[in-house]
Length: 325
Image 1 (cartoon, one colour):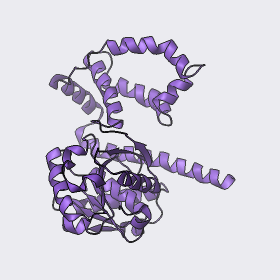
Image 2 (cartoon, helix red, strand yellow):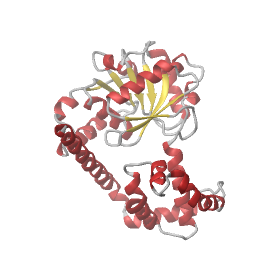
Image 3 (cartoon, rainbow, N blue to C red):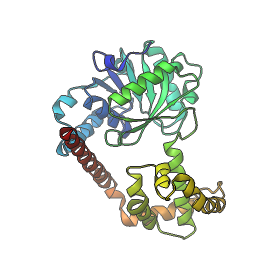
Image 4 (cartoon, one colour):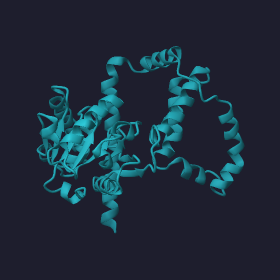
């Protein structure tokens, strides 16, 4: 029987295995919520470097009023010298290693030997169903995909994707844990490559690339269309609510009015069009004109500060609403 989320918040730690951008982000989510976190990465030096980056991010979060005590959060993080040390007695493990089946399979074969019978494991994989790297392992019933958006401490949605072997108890445990951490939980009912988020993003990217390839619009004009158009509504509602509100009679009225247009658009594309080296080169050239390679890190930090500003404003509005009740 898996440990309850209250046990995780008590004496049982969580482990983060793989401390790149995603793993480090998860460490902040867990430690910010008061959990003891062990960090481990097979690459020597990666974990110590991750700790430095985590500290920098926590100070940024503090400046936006999103965390109170940076030192107390950092005190909950422990560097583990080995995988066995990281996962010993852990109630939950968040796996965030390379997006390759062979790498994940090798790790889960180790976890199968090291974990106790109550430990649940979530994989941060962006699109690989967990059955592809857990099939035949005893641990499979306690493994599911727990896919975040990066950085997970600022963008709350998380997809829970069980394999056919995942037990209902493991799903329930992770659902309760993620809710207790303040994440927005999406249940993907069965395995599919890319899950929900990246399948939706993939369709948008496919059309964006095709519009560039056809000479219809530049990368920047397509980004403007999203940033200054669709993104305004999509920042607080999804596509179904959007169309429901975009016609006087709701969703059925919208489909009656515009369904034929969308069908025609869909039929104008062959879904086997690939991203050629020439197309990728043109997109890369356009992006580097707008953002030189050596400014990527600085721009990512800008993105995170913008997200922090939004999160900070929402937090203040929520607190004001609570006081007014």
